Amino acid sequence: MKYFIFLDDSGQLHPSYPYSDFFVYGGLLVKESDFHKVNAGYKKLVKTIKKEKKIEGELKTSNMSNGTRTRLLKGLSNLAGEQIFVTVKVSTLIRLNFENKRDVVRYKNYMVKRLVQELIDTGKLPQHCSFTEIQIDNQNVAHSAQDSLQDYLFNIFNEDNYYQIDQPYHKTSFQCDFRVLFKDSSNNYLVQAADLLANTQAHIIDDKPDLERFLKENHTVLKLPDKVTY
Figure 1 (cartoon, rainbow, N blue to C red):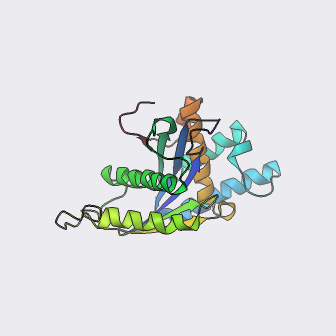
Figure 2 (tube, one colour):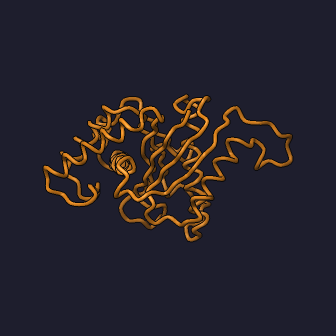
């Protein structure tokens, strides 16, 4: 069975970012059989709101009213799929060289890997999943990041000893192929939904915890680093 993961980020993975100490990936996990209904449902809602408000172009969260946000979140919560998040408190990453772009990309890859692992551990990404396609907003993403993340996920989850070559080879219990695609959010409605969710989770952590009541029940939030409370 095939699953889709749609992700976008909020904040910046850099300690000098003035608006927040948190970097967030947020989005949706949707199984293939639900994809068209979820996509069509959210697309219809977005187009209805844009028509009512006479908005041209993409409906961005950066200048979205509270009423529009809650209306979109309520609509999303009525659609199939899991709402998923992984967050990090940037100031705690004392060993990360933020001036090295490759190091930053590696940590972002690690965040996505940890989110996928959490979905496997909780059974939301089931053992019978044979293919997972991850679609991420392509804003400010280097082309090298696509192959980097795609290979990293495949080797972590399919080659148990890929990074431990001194140990005997044992296949992992989760055998799944991965494809990573970086998409233009202007014409990808579920990446737009991921933008809304990531931005909302960032607000929940920073200063608006009441927004959590508009998220889907039993949504996934993985907070990094481990053992850091926030």
